[in-house]
Length: 196
Image (cartoon, rainbow, N blue to C red; front, side, top):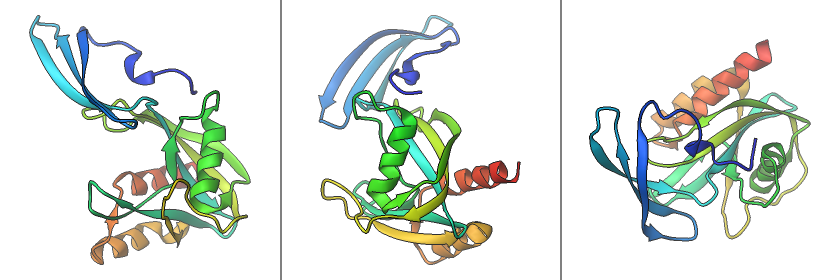
C-alpha cells in the first residue's frame, strides 16, 4: 500500500499506451490525453483527469455507539452538499495508507479510530480518473476534537445507526439530499466484515 501508482501497473490485456500528453494542468488535476493501441491494432485516444497523487483513502468509521460517521461537503461539480464517507488524498510524502486514513478521519470529523483495517481497494472511476482507493474500516471511533476540515474545508457531520444505515440513507435520498453512490456499498461491505 502506498507509494506506487497502481493505476498504471498490471496487465493491460493486449492494449498498449503509445503516448501521454498533458492538455491542461492545475495543482490538483491534469487533463491527460493518452494515445493507445488496442489488440486489433486500432489506435485510439482517451482523455482523463489524472491526479498528481492518484492514491486516496476512504474510511467507514463506526463509533463506539454503533453509528456510522458521514461527512457533508459542498462539492462544486454537483453544486450541492454531498454526503459521503471521510476521504482524502495520499499526498503526504512517506505516509502509508493506514496513517493517511487515520489522519483524514481526524481532520474531517474530529474522530479517532480505536482499530483500523483494510476493507477493500481498487479503481474509483476508471474511465475518468487514475484514482486508486484504499478503503478502511475504523472501529471504536470516538470524538477527540471539535475541529473539522483543513484549508478552508467546511464539513458537516451526520451520525447514522449502522443497524439502520440503509433506511437512513433512503430517507436522505427521499428528502432530496445527494449521497455519494459508494457510501451504501462500502457500509454494507463493512457490515459483512463485522459479521465474520
